[in-house]
Image (cartoon, rainbow, N blue to C red; front, side, top):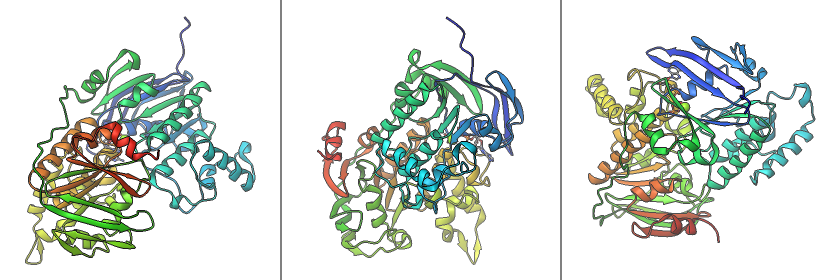
Length: 495
Ligand SMILES: Nc1ncnc2c1ncn2[C@@H]1O[C@H](COP(=O)(O)OP(=O)(O)OP(=O)(O)O)[C@@H](O)[C@H]1O
Ligand SMILES: [Mg+2]
């Protein structure tokens, strides 16, 4: 058998930020036509490594070889020149532009892409149709939900003359159907000899799509394994440096008292939604992407208008027309899209964690900074936020650690009712277990939780009851004993 040669090699890569040695002698190699997955806990350095490859960060030390030749990548343009295309963890589309304009952005002038707007729109439409997206090429990106935006990013990247495509958590907000379409595209790209670097916290995807997997921990390279010669357990142990036990630990309590009642809630996205949430209950919301779960939560929380319907808290009707009203009524919401709604990236961890409860620290017109720091530290510790300190800007944290700060800020606000929309998206397996443990503790102390999640094992593992939505309506409310994968899916899809 002839030795295959590498398409890409990264050797001895170092990168530091103030207070963080984000990459410490890191290695990665990639064959043409292979999918190489990168695994590691939140903050392990995965995104930093690919940002070095993409010319967004300049490495402090190390070498990059493409087709065996040493190259210098100091800018995004350099990276493009070497055929490197990156789909970043945070979406970078221009919302005020159409899908087609976004897909062709920066490619209009290149010789091979000198084509008319009509031709661009036609080509875009073909691509959208091949992904069964049900979208128009001329539609503005701002009118798309997160999953749709992510698909547009993926289409944009595959539609370039790339030799190396990097996908940083591409599936985190996709439905199963969209994941299937993406995997088919990846298989096509492989056949063309394109090398793919694939970052995901979903271990179950490895078997389906990856050939090899490299594990990173605390900025260090740990090991590379061939997927068919390793096991999920082995990889998790390499990732977290210890063995993990069962992580859905629930102390089920008798939930009797109704705390929240939603009656016949309707607006342009949801129809006649009625359900009850009990005190100390974890109520799961399952359904396909687009089933109306997020929209229901936004309406309850006052972010979207309601056309009709009633909301009662502890038996009393409440009128919630803004998130401020919701907060005053004791409701918190960890949003699906943290970049847009959850955080201030240019502010510190401390600010972000305590901003909702600042009034608690104000005494005699002065902020009790000591108390504020105490609270901020407590929640940062509880959620193991990985950062040099409380004053680190949230925008500089890894994706998963940003999510932890959003959750921390809501825990600090101590709501009676906490709505969590995809709370563990982008969160590593160790931190997930910590979040589940916190949810269990909250429920035990009488906090009521609504958890919207597309990960069925998590819904089933954590919920007292499961509400299933389909096409903007509730299709089933299942007790814990009835809520298995098959029953949930049957109710989630249109038969
Ligand atoms: N621009 C920056 N300034 C300061 N620190 C940074 C910056 N970018 C990354 N870091 C730090 O580098 C470390 C590695 O972060 P990175 O985003 O690479 O993690 P990751 O493995 O992608 O994690 P996740 O799974 O959460 O996305 C983290 O401690 C992060 O806070
Ligand atoms: Mg990352």
